[in-house]
Image 1 (cartoon, rainbow, N blue to C red):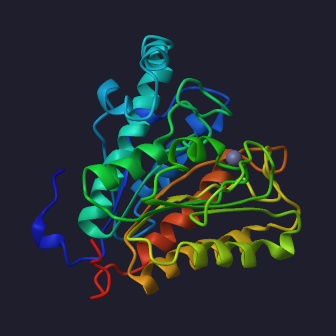
Image 2 (spheres, rainbow, N blue to C red):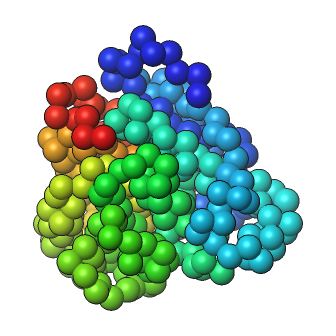
Length: 300
Ligand SMILES: [Zn+2]
């Protein structure tokens, strides 16, 4: 990365993205980062810098996926493969930037349903698992938290990380898709059915993550009431804005290094791609706002 050490004390937020993330498709997972990157490039959020990631390699993906599955994926549809490798590389680079600067993100999504040998629910590579294992194995982080606030459950992530004693999983969903059964006090899953209970469930999820040394945040916007795939009536834009404030403020207050990815969020007859990008922008504004230079921050 082209980071200038003299900028380290600034409240910089490095966000990874490149044109390769975007594929001409009717699946928002492959399109929505484009309009979001355009907003960021306009300078609307001070302190944000957009960096192109190095694509993920087959070798590094072998940590979490079966070789035959990877070969099929990489030699399949060329544009899709390029998008998947670029956006997964962005997750890895965001993890490294988080370790260095305390906060970072990637405009990646589709990272929590994939299983070791198959794609599932629009997800091909489990980028959350890749990032968590890299934090532990490459950076020596003792306790990594994964907070999944996508509308759908992160059963793929549980499959890959559930037995890892260095990983704390918290998952607050509002849809039973890809649900999983906690089997340790390191695991927390709450499926919310009533929007009035949502923010309290988010707070309880954060409490479950107390003591982690770093946080990987799957910041799905598909709980939104007008979402086309996962929305729950009553989870308004304002509720999601408060959710993003709660999560980011928790990171600042606890001095926990954190990185985010976009996760789910879909258009509907009531909500178009620009509106969706504006929802995801709320996560970025909160991450840009929080300060990573308080003395308690450097846990790593
Ligand atoms: Zn989802």
